[in-house]
Length: 454
Image (cartoon, rainbow, N blue to C red; front, side, top):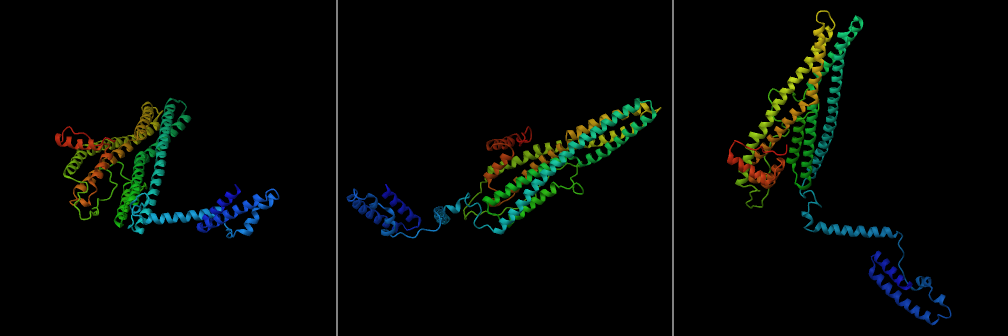
């Protein structure tokens, strides 16, 4: 067994040192020598068996071994593995299949490194905006809940104190209670005026929408960098989209805050003007880019349905929401102001009963109005309807920009575009085609809504 172990160790050592030919030759010499040594030892076995099988003498005198390496076995194996991996990667890089693999090579070979660097810088800025809008949205949600609780508590406490002052017969304590309730009503009125002007629930919905849209933009840029061939035009479009979102959903409250009670309700707009797309190469072949007459007619029918049904319905609901919100925003401070006047005259000889009733009932009604407006988040409902109308307006502009482009090579791929529209409307491709076909048969009466998602 010792003879074969020695042969195996010699061959392994030679492979590690990349001298396999010399190693095999040495192993054969060692094998023949050991066999001869074994025959000699068999003849003299009875006299001195210990002296004939001495391996140290064999290694030092009869075999010419190379010098042992100074590095360890682990380092030798790591060096061999690194060399093999490098050779494999060089072969893979020269292989034509590797140049077409999107998983191993996510970026196009002819992409400008400066363009990629700019897109990554935009992605970092967008990711930061996502976090900013998320954090500020949580803060303003806390404002809404804390201010609602505080104002209701102040108003109800003031109403209770007004009722106590009206039933008290001692003048000095009654005057102190009346003064305190009046001050509390006045403070509640001032806080309500500020809260109704800012509409914290609507601010929260704006930040939610901004955070979601910035995440969507981040995913689009990441997809472009991964599987697309970005150019300077793509960088400019990404910058315009970021700035358009900043204008649509501003963070400051002074100067650039969105109008909370607009006279005319318009859909939210958070995208820049649609640009003409770049031409796609088709190698001189006639390519319709996934478009045909039937698909164009289907898209035109969908635009008509969204214009007549979905967008119009959400605009109508948004107008009702803003009218209700405006009425509640006026009624709350008005009721607390009247309650403050009633609490000031409560307990007097001539108007004591009516003043006390005004102070108590006015405070109770003000709490109800405040709870309906801010607890029910009417401002948030208005912003949600406005954003939904903007969603359908964006889809209409996207479809029209493709249909108005006479060069089909500059359009988005028809099959891909149809799938995107179906997913955004919460429908399958067959349902989308059936909707367009039924709309063309029925006309403008008894139409179904295009959207099934919300």
